[in-house]
Length: 545
Image (cartoon, rainbow, N blue to C red; front, side, top):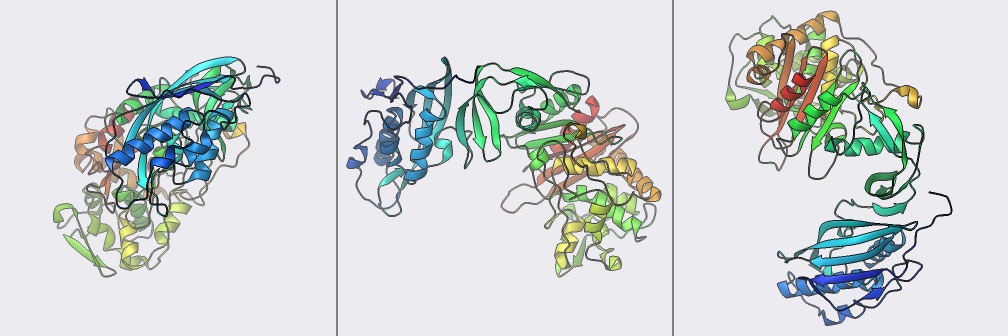
């Protein structure tokens, strides 16, 4: 597309319909496409609404939604905005629907109200540079009582305009600043969002970061934009010429990860190669499209015991083959900690306590640590946690803050203020597997010269050997036995975890494991215990690797 091409909304018609019957209001949006020059379908729509109190009624909900959608469909941003509880924000966004998203025509069809919520269907056309393409989607709005006016008003959220918009995001159309990219895996196989749906946010971020460096030529698109730039392409108007971007992902492992998370809602998984730190797969199955696999921050539960065990062994307080007191409960900092179903294991070794995930065996040695920051130091200095990883896209580092009292004890078993995501936990397992932290990477740092995080010290050989032996025991006869029985190969290890979350009826399910030169970790929000949901996901990924 040449630089002189401009978008325009010329004679665009917005039409609102109810039950397939038009309101009878047709409005032309002005040639400038400012979203303010149309007819006045909703101009006096607020006149009927009287001040009231209490929850909005069914009649108020239907009438308010009908008036709002009619004004929006007529291109009258001011009238539509006046029917919301945030007129300034609504008017700007609704006006930009035509002027910045270049929507030249829209038919809006309300559905049947459900309480104060009204669903609707938008069937629109986007016109830019002489090219018109259809855009259709479903969304919904909620009617509330105005705090000061007492009138029924649409509760304005950016998602009213489009369901995928988050707070502060906008719809934009035109020639994007970065050309499209053809992302390929480590073997040159193309990775597309159509074939690997949960990679969409990853591919969008890779494009934003490296599109200009990969070559190619921009086309014309409709996209969601946030403060950091284009986030997601919604509609392609004119195909661009993509540049090629090589990633460290593995198409086979990615396909297995997609299948595995698809069986569980709110599930995420990451696979890495311990010998290199290369990320082999990233997959999420979430309604919100959030890349929780790399950007989440949840308590990791007993998967944190890998780090805790390394710290305790490193300080000579425990050893895999030495007895570890595994009682039904343990008190620390005034709080009583229990094992699952209050089990106990008299005479158990530390390895057995690790394999059975005995909480008390990890809490009782705290008195000998005599360093509130011991766990935080081990996590950062050996496992590379919280070292500002630069994977190639945005990711969130794990956090292991210094703690005292009951919070310190909670941290030893992966609760308290400790937060991780599957990327962090997969890296922890990879570090345990080799004894060396290698920062996870999606793309080569040579692309942009970014600095890669390095850990302060290598894990002691004796610590690494004991960690791996305990993870192997967990896989063969501990809490991961049934899950890992489905994983091929003889060299495999694992650790299960569950994390209690305030307000949740079921704990988060965590599982991490290795097989050969692949380490993987998964988390399912509200999935139950480690082997319940996260375990099968990791097993599926390890088998592919």
